[in-house]
Image (cartoon, rainbow, N blue to C red; front, side, top):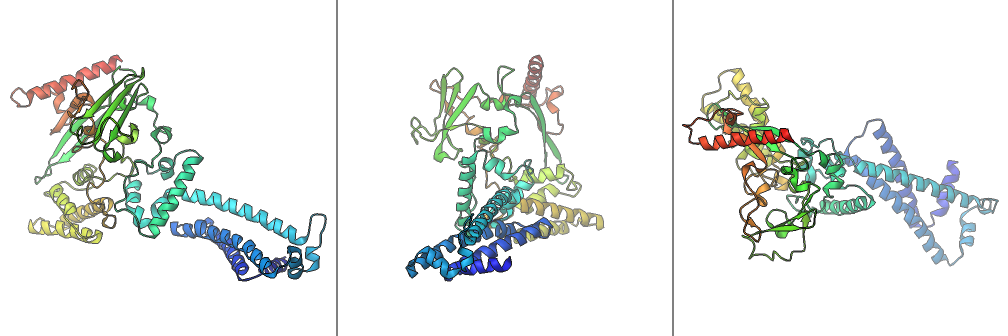
Length: 503
């Protein structure tokens, strides 16, 4: 059988082009089977090997198949003979003799064609499956996607495949994503890409096709209590607490909405932004179910851009606020506070919050220099403080160094020009972004009324940088200069709770 196949290959290898085609096809076929076998037994499990197995070998196989008929066409044209005459020259008479099902050569070609089709289909299926795996997305182009891969693995969506959000559903989505992936691969090979990688706000599928496959909008109701712990820059890294009751309702039951009012089925919020970057908002339209609208325009931008005629209009959805829900880069102080809160750093170490923050935010020329600089900073400070007293204190410092270095490695990536706060997070209202993009006194309707932007619109405040988590629920001290504010916040919370209980 092998001899017959070898003779057949010799017969179709009519010139150098045909020989190259046979070599490419055979090598790719055998190579794919060999690498796939090693994968199945667990010897190979690497994205770069996957690139060879599922992209390089299939491309080589198809290229070989294309070369063989091309070689035969050129050979026939050069010889000036018919196909029948050339077959008589290249094959034995018994192989080209016509039978009930055709000649042996025809049957071999038919059989090999079926094998090729099945092979390409199987490889295509395995290739799609391989390219749908998060490990491929994160490690195949490690220098480019390394930062995103690092953030993804520590995110709330670390068990959700990348393609669930970045590709979406439907054949058109898959084809568009794969074509875009080929373009990105070419740019990566040529090192012709932006650093840092821009947030793909225009390539993401609509939230109704992605987020809402798991997060059910009709179940966005009620409230959620959260406490944020911050630590001071003093010797004891004194803790203070901010406790909020987030009003996450859409407004279906209570008659007035909370945070998720923006995506309630009764409302449609449309907006336009400068450069379509979704950061500087030009105007906002609130469209009710009855078709009536109310427009708010940014009076600061009114004479700088054409607010009446703007072609890029977006309907607000989940990712307008949850824009870093998976690839989350932490602000430095928040990162340190979270590690202390989780007990990963011993707070009895003097000035640990202040010194860790100073160590990770210093200006370093490279990732390696940053890691070494963090170690030098912390150990140098505690030596100067004469605080290294015994093995236990040294262990505490060493642990603080490891935690600070881990924070740095997660959030800082010099080769991609990613530093602190490179990617703005619109969840909440840090600085002037987030909620304040729309909820600010500059967004006004034609009657001069601004979009509501009061603190209690979306949350009740039970403590704000206080020593107790529920400071404002206690009886306010009349001698406290913030007495009236505490009284107002307590009454607002109690009133909101009564209203929620009634509904």
